[in-house]
Image (tube, rainbow, N blue to C red; front, side, top):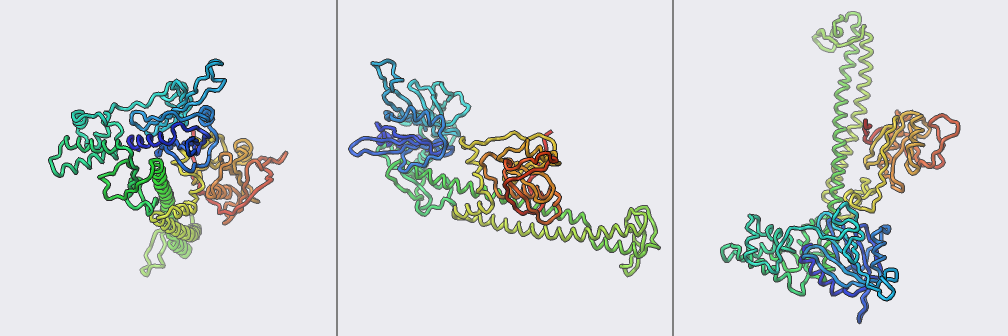
Length: 600
C-alpha cells in the first residue's frame, strides 16, 4: 500500500472512529489485532478496527464481520486489554506520509494510577502500526512514548522494551506538496528512470503512482519534445489528484472482479488506487464505497492468489521430488540387472563345462572347452576359479538361477516404477492445469500434503510452538527421516531396544514393533499432540518389519501405539515389553525413509 493511499484511509478512519470507545480487544491470529469500537451519536454504531502486521500483507482498516479468535492470549494482548479497554480514540496520525499509523487513546486514570487524591489525570497510551518492510510490527506505547510491549518480539534495539520509540530511519525525501521544479529536476539528475527517481526522492510515492507520473509524462511528450518540465507537469497533476478530497478508492483488475479466478491469477493482476490510472486503461476499474472495503477486498484477493500459488508450487515440488526419486530407483534397478549378467550365458557355460568335464583343459583363468552350440565347434575359454569343471559348472548354474530370479524381480519392480512414474506425471499435469482451489486441495490431500501446514505459514507464525527436542546421540540406534520430515529411531539390539523405548522415547512418541516376530523397537518422535501423517506411519512400519525376523516375508503385520502404553515386563530379558493398547497395519518389509548419518 502506497503512502498516499494510506493517507486517504487514515482520513476515512478519522471520520469513522475518532472519539469512539474501545469495548473489546481480540487476536484473530498471531499477527492481527482487532478492536471493537463503540461510537455514540444519533445512530450509535459498533465498529471493528483491524490492525494486521502479517508478513507480505500488513494493513489497517475497518471490518464488518471480525475474524474469530484463534490464538491463546499473549503478553501484548493482555497488556492492551488492560490499558485500552474503556479508552477513547483521540487522534490518528500518519508519520511522515509513510506507512506508519499512530493511534492516540485516552481514558480517565484509575485510582491506583492517580498522582494524588485531588488530581486524577487522564491515562494516555498509543498504538503504532508499522506497515512496511520485511518485519512489520505493532507497538504499545505509554504516555512518554516508551515501548511497553510489541506484538511480535524481535531482536531489535530500536524497539526494545522500555526504550523510547523511534520510527525507522529512512532516507531524506522531498515533500510532494512543496517540491519545486528545480528540486524535482535535481533529484532526477541521477541517471535513473523517472519512476525510480520519484520513488527514491519523494515522500508517499510508491511504484504505482510513480508509474502513473511516467505514463502521463509520455502522454504529454507525444505533442512536444520530452523534457523534465513536462515530467514535472505530470508529477504535479498526479499530486493534485492524490490530495483531492474526497477520494474514491478504485480496484483495478485484468478481468471483471466477479469473473476473476485466484488460482489462475497473479498478484500483479490486482491494483488498489486512490485515483484513476492512465497506465491501466485496458484494465477493469471497480469503484468501491470506502477505502476500508477496498483494502479488505484487495488483500483478501491477493492472499487467495498467493495461497493458491504456494499450494500449487508445493504440489509440483513434491511431485518433482517423487519423480526424481523413482527415476533414480529405475536407474539403480537397471544397474542391478546389468550386474546380474545374461542368465542364458551362465546356463550355457555351465552345460558346456558339465558336458566336456573330461576333455576340458585347465588354463590360468578358466577352462578350454568345445562350444557345442556353435556349428563350427570352436574352442572357447570359460572363466572359472573353481578347481574342477563340475564345481565351476555348479557355480554357473547357481549364478543362472540367481540371475533369472533377479531379472524377474527387477522386471516387476521396473514395471511398478514405470506405473508410478506415469501416475505421478499425470497428477503433475493435472496440478499444473488446475483452475480451482478445490482441485489443488484434493490433490494435496491425495499426496498427504494436507496433514501439515505450508512451510511459508508455519515458519513465520510466532504462535507455533516448535518444541524442538534434543537430537539423540546414543549408541545402538539407527536414525531415519520420513518423507514428511519426522525423525524415526530404530534399535539395533535387545539392549538398544530397551534403552530407546524407556530412556530416549517420550510418552507421546509413537512406538512400533512387528507383530509375532522378534525385531527392533521403532519410535517416531513428535511434538505432544502432533498428528503423524499416514505416509510417515507407513514408512516407520516398513522399518519395523524390515528390522525383524519377518524381513523376507511379503507382508508383515506391525503393531503401533503411543509409548506411554508400553511397559517393561518385570524380571524379563531386555527388550521384552507389554503393550496395553495398540493398533495394527500391514506393510511390506523395506526401507523408504531416508537414512541419517550419525554425527561424529
